[in-house]
Length: 128
Image 1 (cartoon, rainbow, N blue to C red):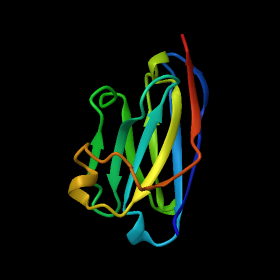
Image 2 (image 1 turned 60 degrees about the vertical axis):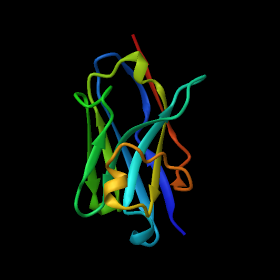
Image 3 (image 1 turned 180 degrees about the vertical axis):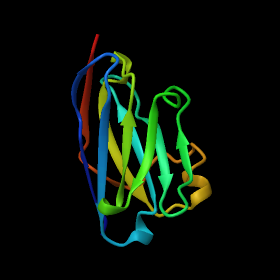
Image 4 (image 1 turned 45 degrees about the vertical axis):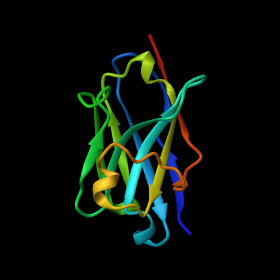
């Protein structure tokens, strides 16, 4: 089994930055595709960014691509999400997911995380 755990959320002012961290444990082959998803109250879950372990192929959603950076974190067998210039619209519960889907699908933007291993989420609140 794969376990997933997020950390690093918090409350910040608009324009500030936060870095989220995701750690995984268990067989790597079951979690080579890792991604960040977020869900705000009353809204559907949306994909934010993904990365494929090893080759580093990434996907960043259009609405955050100029502000967010996803990187692999080998020490935690996971990844980090550097979020800059945050706005109130970025406020949401952020979830880390990991799965064994292939690199192309992982970095296509089409991966929804259905059936993946999920963390409990970390809250990000941005005040104006």
